[in-house]
Image (cartoon, rainbow, N blue to C red; front, side, top):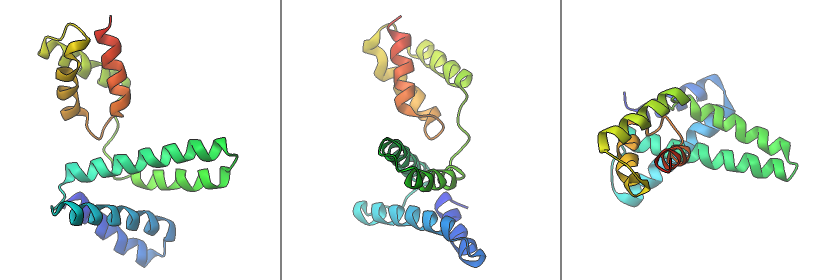
Length: 148
């Protein structure tokens, strides 16, 4: 079953169980999927669905920090609950050691020696770590390694 199909099944089960909080998040994700399918006239594959889910989680994390800065802990808790639901659909995140090993391997494979080779390294790491690591943090680690 595709990831999008899993969302549709989970929507049905959340409706039957009366789980309004989970149902709301699943419907938001399905609406985001549908919007992109209509705008781009494509059928989403699992990789693209994961990209959308990662973007949704990132947006909510940004919202949490803004709500906490504004002393709105009640709204931050709602966002955190939505993140928890969305993360159940994401693959397991890479550990720091696994990520470091992946970066080292990509640097060795590409023959990168300076910051000018960052694109080569990021291209290799992105294909392996997409959806399993924050690519912004990965970029910072790669940059730090290449500047040594």
